Image (cartoon, rainbow, N blue to C red):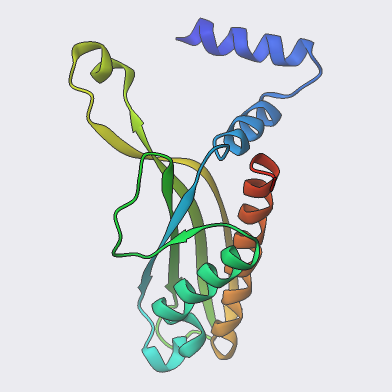
Length: 174
């Protein structure tokens, strides 16, 4: 396995491409052929709902993400609908944490696109069950004042716009 990784690194180095560039190209290429996206939002916080405010409500985040994707021309599948083999789900995760009586909130915003994948070892043995695998992801980490927690939403908006741009690069409209 180490030899395979070293070989891939050497080939990419000789071509003038870094290993990181190669990974990013593969990550973006994994979006090619995706036909629809389900949006799921998960939040984790030790803050009161009054501190978090309405801008970071799970339903509002999901609706906003779906609207941004639709405006970009990307097919969005309703949460309660089954999705096919060429579809995937966009998992939006928001973690907010503030120590008691602290004026700052630490946040982590994570956006991951998951697709169905079959592990090679399972396919070779006939047990070809699929597993969800994150094929594209990006995140943002930072701090904001407790009075500005709602501003974290712009981090989601930026990540969704980045995802939509990468998706459209791989799936240009015809």
